[in-house]
Image 1 (cartoon, rainbow, N blue to C red):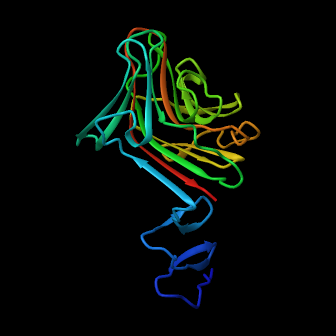
Image 2 (cartoon, rainbow, N blue to C red; image 1 turned 180 degrees about the horizontal axis):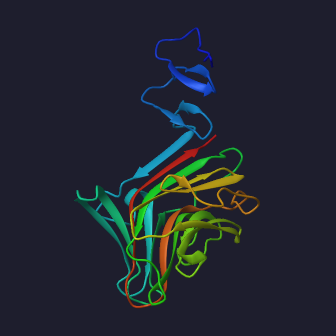
Length: 267
C-alpha cells in the first residue's frame, strides 16, 4: 500500500498541502494579513502582492475607455465597443463588452488594456489568462472577418508580439488556430477545435519557453507552442487584447466578452 508522509510539526495557522506525490508539507503562516493561497504555476504559495499580480474584470461598467484600464479602438460605419452592464439571468451573464465591426467592409472593433506592459522573461516566467467569449455568427464567404483573442499589440492587424487564438472560416477548415508572435515572427499551429457562436472558455498559460492553450478546459491540438517565437526578448511587450476585423460584407459581426481573469507571477 502507498504510504503518505506527513509533517510532524506545525505552527498555529499553517495549511497542509501536497508538496510532492504522497508528501504533505506545511504552508506556513504569512507575515502579512489579508492574503490567500494560490497556485503560482509550480506550487501552492501565498498571494504576496509584491510578488504576484491578479486582475479580474467582469465588465460591470457603463463606460469603455478608462474602465479598469481598458481602451477601445474602432473603425467603420456603426462599429463600436459597447459596455452592456445589465444582468441576463437566463445566461448568467453579469456585465459584458461587445466588440462590433459595423457595416463597412473593413470595419473593426477592438479592446485592449491601455498599455503594452506585459512581458515574459526568466524572472517572471509564468502568466495565465482566462476569458469567456462568444462570436455572434461565424465568418463566411459573404461576411468575412478574422478574430484574435488573448495577448497582442495591434488593434489593426496581425500582432508583432503576442500569444493568442485566431479564427477565420477559410483557414484550418474554420477551426481555431493558436499563435505565438515575437518580433513579427510567428509560430501558428492548427487546432481541431471548431469555432462556434456559443459562449466559450479560453485559457492561455505561458512561460518564457512554452505556451499552453485550452478551450473549454481541454488543451487543444498542437499545444503547447515552444521555440524562439515566444515573445520573451528585449522590447517584446504586449497587452491583453481582443479584436474582430472585417474584410468583406455589409453585415455587422460581434465579438462579446463576459469576463477576463489574469494572473502573473512577478518574481
